[in-house]
Length: 238
Image 1 (cartoon, rainbow, N blue to C red):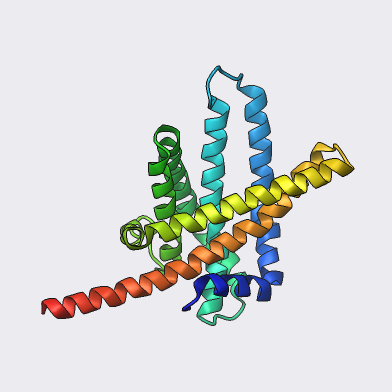
Image 2: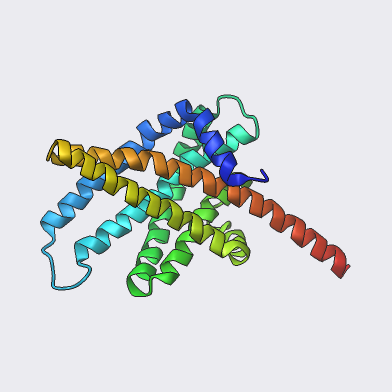
C-alpha cells in the first residue's frame, strides 16, 4: 500500500464486475432518488433573490448525505477484499444493510454540519467533509461506531489535511470537466434532457467509486502510519 492512489485504480479495474453490482444496486438508486428530490425541490420551492435559494441548500444537504451514505458499501467491499474474505461483495451488501440505519443517521448529521459550513464559510465545510468521509472508512476497518471514529479521523486530517482536500478537489474538478465535455457532445446529437441526465449519471458512477477507493487506500495507509508514529512516541516517553 505504498502507492495508495495507484492501488485504488488497479483495484477498480480488477474488481470492476463486482463494483458494478454495488453501483447498480446502491449508487444508481440513490442517484435516481437525488435527481427526483432535486427536481421536486426546484419546482416546489420558489426561487428567491439571492445567490443560493432554499432549494439549493436542501439539494446540497441531500447530495452530501447520500455521498457519505453511498461510500459505505464500497468501503466494505474494499476492506473484505483486502483482508481476504470469501464472497466479499455479498458480505459488503449484508454488512451495509445491517448497519444502514447507523450510517444513515451519521450521514444526516454530517451533511447538516457540512452544509452549514459550506453555506457560511466554505472552508469549515470542506474540513468537516474530509473528516467525516475518513471517519466512515475507519469505522469499517476497526468495526466500531462511526461516531467513535471521528477522533481518529480528525487526527489523520491534522497530519494529512492537504492530501485529503487535494483528493476531493481533484476528483470533483475532473468529474465536473468531463461531465461538461460529455454533455456538450450529447447536446450536439440530441437535446433530450434524459440523455443529458444519463451522461452525468454515467460519469458519476465512475468517479465516485474511484474517489471512495482512493480515500479508503489512503486512509488505511495514514492510519497505520499514525499508529506507528504513536508507538515510537510512547517508547520515547517511557
